[in-house]
Image (tube, helix red, strand yellow):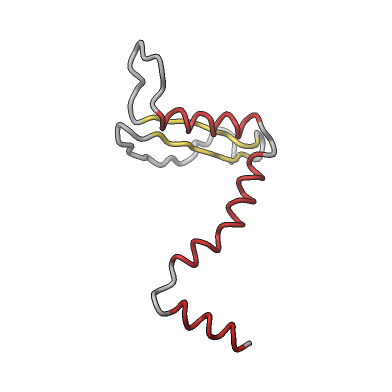
Length: 103
């Protein structure tokens, strides 16, 4: 990106109970991590709502533990096939198993 040029932005609407973890990548600065909440924490609150606490914990771990993002990606790639298996229509699984047995 050239100096003085503004990046395009995307607007995301959050429900009041939602929290977004926004991860960016910049060639010069590395990874950026932001947390955006759909509502402010009430003044005087002694605890964060669970969703905010989880997202903040993930953001902090991404920023402070260099191996964590590799671990997350490894987990994702290891479990990616499980999502594909869930997309199989009933009956298709039996056909695939029969083909495997024939081989």
